Length: 434
Ligand SMILES: *Cc1c(COP(=O)(O)O)cnc(C)c1O
Image (cartoon, rainbow, N blue to C red; front, side):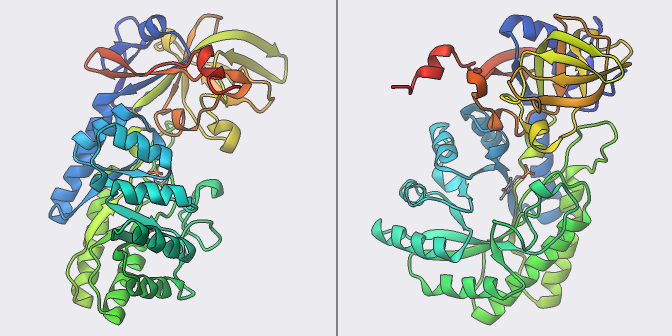
């Protein structure tokens, strides 16, 4: 049997895969495939465990911020905000989505390594709570924009702390050779802080780092917290300021495979908090507010994608292709970085999984695969294939390649389902064609 690890998944009496009380085969019948399915119950459970960890280990002095790039739509913004999280956006489009969802601008944090002038204007005009400045050039531009609108803007500085977080190099962002942030070791960070304090329309409120993604160990986070807090102390003492917060970014790992390790999320805060208390005592500064920015871990395991099996192609001594009605247009992650996934047939979930399959999409690219060497139940055309842990970076990375339409997204909770993103139509595909 395929190992099912997410708390929102189970196998029901019919032997079918169930997500938060909904039978996946029924969801596939009702809404069609491909279909993104997200468990609202699981999303809320993870949000609460993060929020509670701040109460338990850090006197509630700070909060989690949802990195909305993992899965961004209006309903998702509403759900996480209702759990007390702020929202992080990295583009004008994500900012627009959050504002349309009714999120107060002051609860929105704006990130990005190359924000355009128009995006900065939009953020300043809307009154976003904090802008994370990536580089000196942006700092000067932001000062001009804020001045033009007669506003002062709260900023934090994105710092490269130089931490190796042992993850795939495409999704590692804390080391020196990175397009993100201001270098710490060379003294650039201190210079940036100094410059920020000279400007009149930006207020230096904090420091920020984000050391990578899908990280399964606590040490890199503790090490990053230590490095960043020491920088914060240096800045406060040398430049005679008080910084409100330290944002330690996201990157907490999730299960994609049974063999993936797992650390309960509140342990991150527990470990980081101990070190922060120690350093603050040693260096004689008050505790800064702490922010963290989980994306993947909030929504990743809450999502499942359902497909219908089509063509089967067994190539003797080579491999068995199992083709599905989706592919890299709804999930490009295997094509991009050979991401692991657990796959199973939702309608045969309780059967033995001893068929070695290459799950292929329907796009005109040989690399359009969802998984290789996946052990699934014996497949037949018409079976419903479920790919687990697709809540993060699937819908948000989808495209219309080959003019495929983006699938609908359905949110499930306690046995009930509802559409939160409609599936695209062919009409949508030509909407902007002249
Ligand atoms: C992507 C990103 C996150 C979220 O990362 P996850 O791995 O999804 O938790 C947080 N902060 C920043 C700055 C990011 O770029």
